[in-house]
Length: 271
Ligand code: NAD
Image (cartoon, rainbow, N blue to C red; front, top):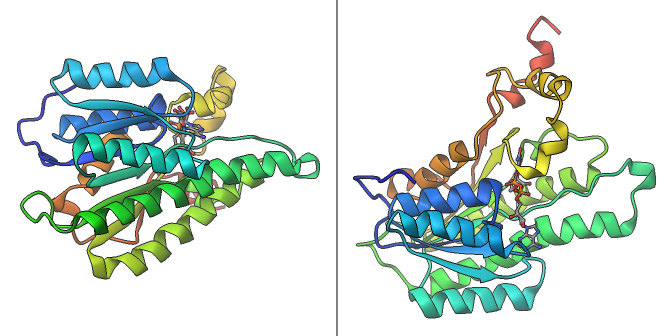
């Protein structure tokens, strides 16, 4: 983990869901590198969560591993309670955990639909709500953070790009967009900032099957004008900045970090 000489998140505490792998792990490591103590949440992968925590603590940071299924209200509430008992409060919550359960639409079962909505959308609702409740309970700490609290929802380019064969996933990300914007509108007067990061294709376990042959990798790169798959650390850096006072006037926005995937690359040669 890189040491940062100017810890812009010093004195703050963060919770990152789904931090046992991929983007969540990179976000947790980045927030810690900028000085935050971090709750590393995991759903089932304790080894992955411990590995994330080890990267943080080996670099001199503070990490607390907590298990919770984000789709279960009692588990989310117990996780926030445990985090607040340990750290005193939270200043940053990154609602990142997400899954794909893919199926052609005609064959999609209610269970496949419901599972993705439960984790990707209801899970975000539960975490955003608990975060906001804690920020309001704790009250301002202007010496630590200009905002009362910062919430980052991990969305996807599929909050705007339709995705055949992934209707449940795209619907969950479209839902996150309005969850984020509506809560941002409601909570802005309380000085709580709510934003989303919408990654394009980032090299993580969730999309391994879409890039595990050279042909698949080539097809994927045709969708990315910048001509590279993203690194989880790209998202980590953005999250650390978006959570900082440097981004204090940003709320209710989705920041696309996608190498140009949302630029309609099919029209690059005139359509
Ligand atoms: P990943 O599979 O590595 O990470 C998902 C994480 O969520 C894992 O740690 C997993 O254990 C956790 N998780 C799943 N269900 C959970 C539950 N019920 N409770 C708690 N944790 C749970 O994949 P990733 O790419 O790092 O995905 C992270 C987020 O980024 C997801 O919301 C995903 O939709 C989003 N995203 C990823 C990409 C990409 O290209 N990788 C693109 C756009 C959006």
